[in-house]
Image (cartoon, rainbow, N blue to C red; front, side):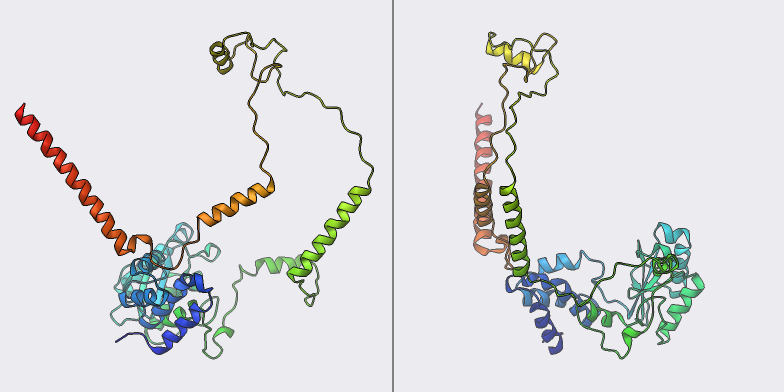
Length: 366
């Protein structure tokens, strides 16, 4: 019996429907969040579920699930507490905050408390250096924390409360957060109305107000042109430019000038020398040897660039010869190909063994 509810399966079909039919594997990331929302982590059953609904093999799904740290591969608590211990936050006391939580909760990195409430981890960077030291709870920020404040947050979480983050909406559990990461709205009443931006985030706005700086005005009701309208306007502009160019008087043709770009003296080219001597002197010229671009010396030049139609034909041929990867299993998963490769390997091994035996016998006879 499947561990996933019918609601999860309905949501999975909805996620897959967001993508083109031949690109359904692009739905893998939100699907992994979806299975994590039901079990609290990406279990082997979750990997199998994603593989089945997308027509992939489990190795392909597992490779993605193990690459991103937001996908947990073992049961995780209701609240993932992450403390930044990278350079900036560390200097400001982030390591002290983390060490205090380790001692207070009795768990280490990526470990969960016995009541299943808190999973603690140290993070290399939470991208909020101007608010350091920072701590997140299910990816919502608590800025400028100190050891005592961090202990107060985790104690309130373990007691059933949901402290208000410094920035962002009200806290939710890891499973509720995974539903949102899968692409579904937070259905709690007023959940997104709480919180607000931090002072550092608003610094630019405050400076603009102080100095009277505003963005250029625009009419939000200005219609957006369709592609056909934009193409028609571009064609009209091109026609006007060509007409203006045709009406302009033709400029007199410039007298062609021989430009070699060489600063060498105008010396006689070594055409009367043997090809071997000429080649050697051209590769290693001295003061008495004409440089390759001297008058009378033939220098290889690039051919004319291909015409646009030739380039288009070459591009079309390349596209036809390299079709995009499909959503099916890779070629190595085909049973026939595996058996064929196995037979070829056995044949090579047998041939190598026979050759070694023959060589050994010959040595004994000698």
